Image 1 (cartoon, rainbow, N blue to C red):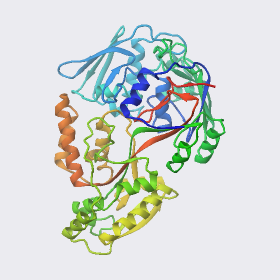
Image 2: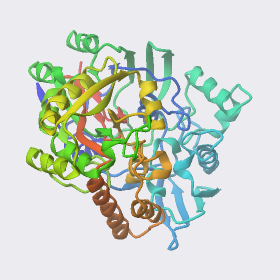
Image 3: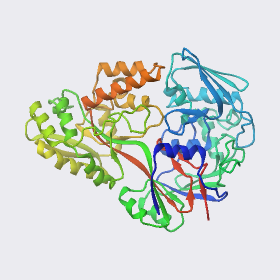
Image 4: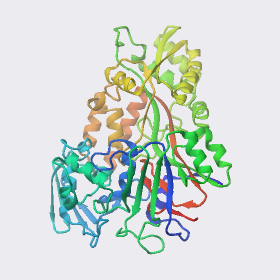
Amino acid sequence: MTRKLVAAAAVLTTALTGPALAQDRGGVLNFARYDGSTLIDPIYADRNPDIWMVGSLFDTLLRSSQDGNSVVPGLAESYAVSDDGTTVTLTLREGIKFSDGTPLTGEDVVFSLNRARDADLSPWAGLLGTLDTVANNGNEITLTLSAPDPTILSMLATFTTGVVSKARFEAADGATDQEKSAAIFAAKSTGVGTGPFYLCGFEQGTSMDFCANEHYWRAGADGKPLPYLDGVHFEIIPDDATRILKLQAGEMDAAEFIPFSRVAELEADPKIDMNLFPSTRIIYSPINTRPTRADGSPNPLADARVRQALNYATNKKALIGLVLQGAGKPMTSPLMAAATQLATETDPLYGYDMDKAKALIAEAGLAAGTEITFTTLAGSADDSTIFAALQQMWAPLGIQLKVEQVDNATRGAKNRSGEFDIHTYGWVNDVNDPSQVTGWLGYFPTAKAVGTGWENEKFNSLFEASATEMDADSRAGQYAEMQSIYAEAAPLLFMYETPFAVALSETVSGYVQTPLGNNLFEEASISR
């Protein structure tokens, strides 16, 4: 038994350079998932169970670097950005093939990126919002941008830019792009992607199978083409206890989303390798900052001093102990996980200080007995634990915390309408750049600062300027200032970061879940 709390750099180093020991080849890894994929198409994948599988079937022009803070060549062996930041030139590697053995061409890249930036097709088109044209001259790809874009290289390493075969896609049954995509997914055959695997089996809601791409271009530690495995078999097992039982019985080789309450137990099992992979998953609670509540009554949370007091009165370490059984850490940046590029670390960020919290409440003139409603997900044990803890923690401030339990759709609707005081929420980055999470949590035009109604002209201006700032140091300074402004305003209850808990059989090595959640199987191996 081992428990792996792996540093982010080490995770990505393993993912890109391979495990240190000699590898077993062959075999099928049996993987227990909490939820199934519905459509693994780079541009249509919009749920984590779909997004996190895209990289196994489709390659991108660029890849994440070993430390996760930059990009390295992928399908493109080299790349360059013009001095004015409006042109990106990439050169494809020679000899890359799709999983059916047909060659990758520049036309496939142009076709794929044009799909990815089409707002009528993809919900992720905005990630390539500055992309004006894509062209190729043989293996040379040229991207022209409408404005300098410091995120463009990160976006070219993002799942939605995965390259598909133009010929296979156009030949697929269906009159529309969506119909062709669905037909390809249903066909379960080689040829559409250049990733380490191809989809070779699928039963909706039950199982899925990946088979090794014998034409994959990357080599393993033994000098032979990856992947090491013959394939991966996925079984969809929503029940936590059942996933764990099947792993312990040897029916499964891996199980994801292990409840933190079971981590210690699995650590003690000599046949289990318990991994806590670093993630960009943060758990926080948006606070309604509007002057009045939805019913027209004055909103006590409109005062930043009250929001600051709630943060100081929240013992984050105690919450982590109660909810995560200690398997997490307090947020150190107010806007993003520590593993995100350009995250600043304020440790502690609103460390527990009841005296300071009481002083702020007195300064704000908050009346004793003030009622605040905390909206949680019905049926969520974690949310129930958080509410019970906060109710006790905030009582010394004279706050009467009431609970409102709703389903996920209702919570989302309340967030958008502003009909809440405070509610539970969470986030995992989809791209390896801070612009996505910062735009969501703090930039008012995106989503009213994650529904809080908080708006700061300086913050908005800095975010807009950062979108075209090509100087890395200047952009880092802009993000540092945004994080400082956001921390002081405290439109959130800043809680904690959680790792990805994955339990593996002792026979498995080389599997990685990245901070973005992506499942990497190409360097996994199994010894039977």
